Length: 249
Picture 1 (tube, one colour):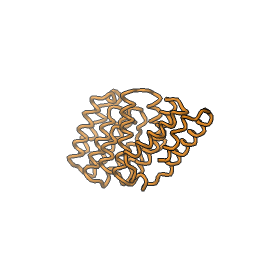
Picture 2 (cartoon, rainbow, N blue to C red; picture 1 turned 120 degrees about the vertical axis):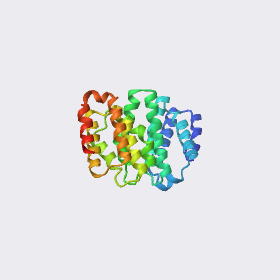
Picture 3 (cartoon, one colour; picture 1 turned 180 degrees about the vertical axis):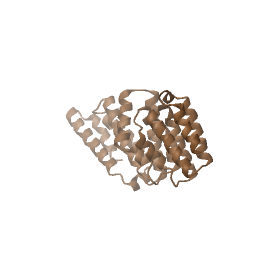
Picture 4 (tube, rainbow, N blue to C red; picture 1 turned 45 degrees about the vertical axis):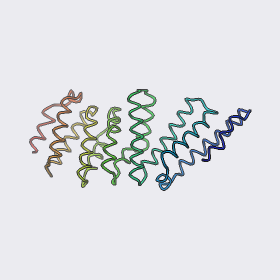
């Protein structure tokens, strides 16, 4: 690719010249990411992308420290991930979800506040939740995004607006999508505030008034059991949570 010819600059004696060339290569790579079309994304294989990322990483290490290189590469990779998420290709969108899921799991296994906060800021700033829950979303996307929803809940940024968007996403959708929505909400239960928990119960009650099916009953049962065993129960009355739902049935 276009980075390969630049790898020989490490043999250039003058540091200033090396740094100028590396900076130009970095800027060129960033522009390449920005200009990637959906057609380009669809045709971009994982192997080809990994080769390109390795080449730019090797180039950056000529002029940047390992930590600086890591941060630049992280930003580049997340911009590519965003492109994948916005693709019309289900395969690429699933790849994007998988990459964010990997970053979430890494942040949870190696808790570093800077990394977690950087990831959280990126998710919120780029409206990742809205992209995931696009009107043409797929049940598999929502299913694989459950750890992302749980991460947002753990970071205390899930509010009733987010839950409303998630709940509405099941309207007029197939059974797999409905079940995926229920599973995504259950993945957040441990971290939901009392206000958010009440909001979910209100949505369950409203849905009961219009229809009653096994999926919703099972979700209500599982949600209640999880709430009773979670820390959220400390702030929410058992009577408040259960009696309205039972009476609605």
